[in-house]
Image (tube, rainbow, N blue to C red; front, side, top):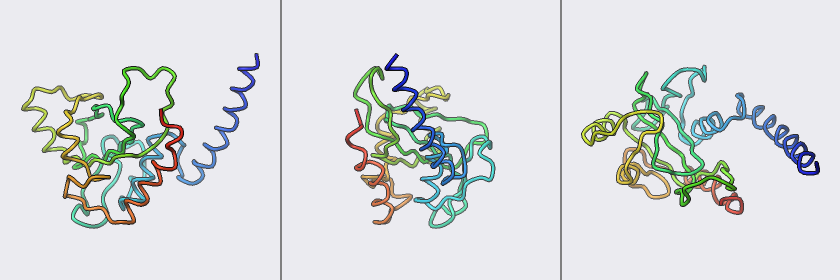
Length: 184
């Protein structure tokens, strides 16, 4: 019974933190909403007024991508999979991910919200490449490492379509280095 009481206490503390996060971001403290908020602030994206809009989370508000639509993803680990929806396809997918997964199982591992890498995929180009390789587009679309590598904008600026500022890099690092002790 001591385990269940400890769990109740931990959930109570988690609920309080979730409320504080919800108050800050204006939406429920779900991982996707948190990722959208982070991306909107760091990458100057105006989010859609409704989080229920399928396929598009917002639009870039400045720079070379100004006005372009974006679907924002945040993954605790990079596992080579991308949730692609062809319904109302955004111009770009911005993917913030934790470290590359080393394990085949998640048993006993935490899945914290951390950002070690950021990728920007131009979706019409990616879909053409995947189609040419016969890859099925779905919720868990397998995307080869070479596409991830060429889409990377942080910490390595491989993709030159969106050049990060020093301040943007600094903000992104705060979502990784401050959390190294809980990454497993």
